[in-house]
Length: 312
Image 1: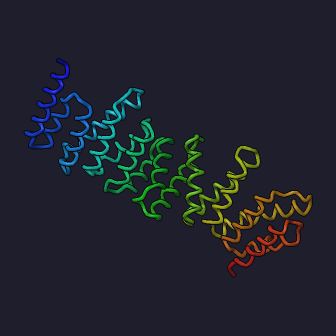
Image 2: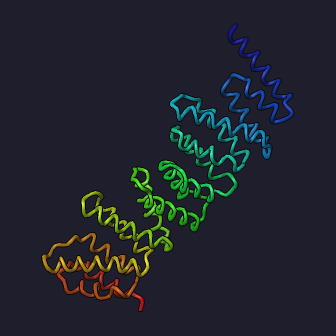
């Protein structure tokens, strides 16, 4: 008897679909029909048929808002419906869906759903750069970091746009009144991105970050690897001001090594290589002095190579 009822309901549903002559009719049917699998299929069809239909776009966006809210509050939802909703939003291809897709990335879904939301965000036409810039500037730390990661991994944004967003992320992290795990992670990730892009516009921010990391490393608050990353960033994006900061550090390293024989080889090498990358001749004396100190041969060789790269 139960199977017979299910068959009858399914036949009624399929018959109803045949007479749906508009996305709005299909939406009304979607709201009433109980079977999740059929509703998911119908939702995707609504998305395909509802392009540029403001009412349908708003309805599907709002439906995902409801699902996001449930998941954020710890409630369980049918993930197949969430996935179907994201697919429908991709079909609609309207930039008004940016906020709701981003909210899905932050709501606490399984990674596969969050990845689908990110894929849709990166796919949909619109000013994605402006949207992510606004989130990095205005939203709470976790959302700032999520937006930054989305920008760095985007296939839509060009290198210039990603460089600008990495610069903005570093600026926001450095300007924060209070540290947080998300802001700290975003700062380190932004430094790596700026180094990769060789984004010279971030020179002043990179110097600020370098001084903070140097102090934190001195007091054991960060690892040496973070300090070396900060040095490498100056080498990639720095100008003469950055070279002077690193030159001063090399002068201190040289003086200590000459006086006591103690030095950190990794940091010393990182500073020398960064100075060579910048190429500012103001640090010539510090580099030249390296060869008169009992450093290992590879450090003295690195100093000579850095001297060869100085611009006169």
